[in-house]
Length: 338
Image 1 (cartoon, rainbow, N blue to C red):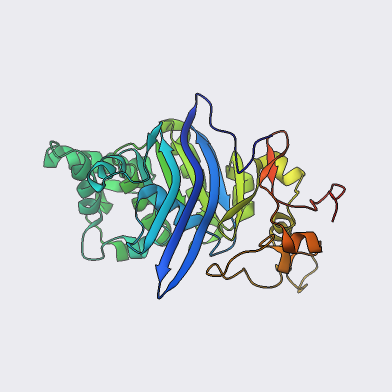
Image 2 (image 1 turned 90 degrees about the vertical axis):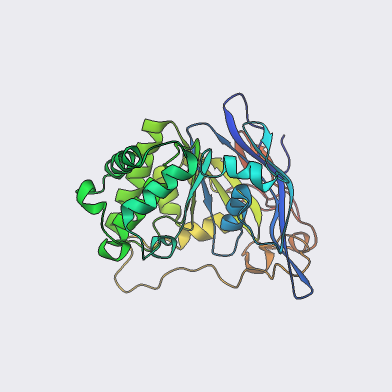
């Protein structure tokens, strides 16, 4: 039995996050945004980080990239190919960020510079990681990247400004920038949130195709369990900065154990529901992360709560083969007692 997360990665392990904690010190308060998170990302595989807004998905990914503000204090371990990143000097981290680990941010309209042409922004990323490349070679490489991410009429779009592109095209540009140095790990942070359903599917299909062609590992951050079901190899469900359920995707969806995961699934609209029927929602509000957490953080919102849940936090451990959860009263099983 493995406690506090996922067993350490084997020979194929690329990223290992262990007991990660991120505290923000603000106005005399300490907000623990990530609380003891542990997981691994194998090479060339996709891990989905799933949960409501504010559960720590983005903060944990920015901790990997060392892109948190000065008010953040990061403890625990983040090992990439066996190299510890926590506490790594910024000069050395710059050699990892972008070239080894890259990130696609949530809102391409805010991430792209509106005053620079698309081609200039991609070539800038190329020059950043290879200062010896010539201007002509960088431009050719930029066009290749634009074609790689299936941006229509790539050479013509090279001189376009961000406002001249659709949301889906801008996101493809962001992916091209992230791939400029051929990273081994790509973090997609809510990469499809602002897009329509059809474009969402196209972007995710593109990421999956690129992953297979380039042999990248992928961390897919989303609140959408439907996307995770279609594209992730494994799913880690987060709540209040903690991991609460993790399993290979098919196993997790066929054998949901954590009531929070069940509530997220029930909240997905379904075509078979009668027209105008009320949508299901997770009741209550997430906990205040600046307050000391006693017991299970989901207990105020859980339909199966008992006094034991309110007083004692359940361990996040492997309860079945390759399936971890943190719950005293898991769905589909007899309770372990109250």
